[in-house]
Length: 457
Image 1 (cartoon, rainbow, N blue to C red):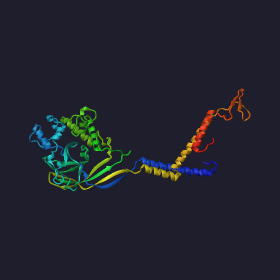
Image 2: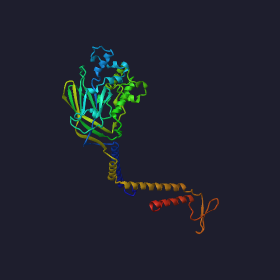
Image 3: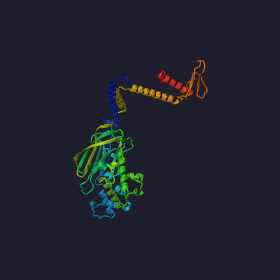
Image 4: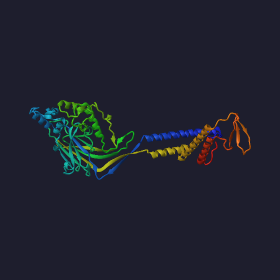
């Protein structure tokens, strides 16, 4: 900046300054982009605990309905002859019979709870530690088991959940057995029984080892999540699916609990009632099949359902063993009281960003916080000088046309004689206009207070 320096020296320093400034801007931009990308680190910790959360267990019969009971109803109402077999049963005929709705039919034909044995621990009945609830899903009526406190401090295959089923139907089917889904307490099993369930066939035993994982996810712009303990993504997907089914059917199926609670999912009162005729029931089942298997009218990716920030998953590792014919045995248990705690944390924080930018400024520009303050001070003083000069020029009075100055003795006032011979007598110390004199006096006081000495303009 020194104009008295040689041109070559000024050019070389200008090149060095330009290169360093460019590198500094590039490095700062790179650090800022990394910070806005919100990178995360994943920490995995194996934690030992005195007890672990036990999942909810939903059990569904692959045959969907109790065909023996359905045959009894059809024969009793003379809709089928007494010689009919279970292969001749059509459940949709029961809808509307004696005023039964689709929900009534499912409740009547559900797998009986007393038909299977359930223990939790050695000789402890499941009803003593939890509750079985009849739930309706997309594959039919099912039973869900939930513990009262959802915690267990027992391990090994003899101390957790034990289930045994026995086939009572005389009809031979290739697809027979049960579906079992393990899920977090409070989640909806309406869709999970079709997407995340495991099968167990008659004549086989299945031992299922559990592993617990807990996720603590950060909500970022690229991967948002909801930190609400009452929120469940599975319930959100279930409600979204039921709303899509409601928009394409004329009646409500038993698993459509969202329509039952709200009374109206899409604002149409015609979809609130249950299916009451065989044709409505068959059309609703056909719509369900088209949506789940062919993707007609519903796509889970189109649902506005975010992940939970606090999520619990249950990994299962099944092992199959040969068992009694027409019987199924299942044991669901923990092998040890440990779980994986997977936690995310920001990999690049604001402190790291400031450190990197400060290091870049110091290395390439020799700058620091004090340097920035000095630059601000220089800019302030320069702005103050410009304002003062501009104000002085705007308030300087125009020069008189032709004047003649009459010299008198110093003790007498100075006389200015204009061309029109009018006389203006002024005191010797008041040669400048009063307004400018006041501004100049205030300006000098401001400069003296800030710079410590008067700046001459």
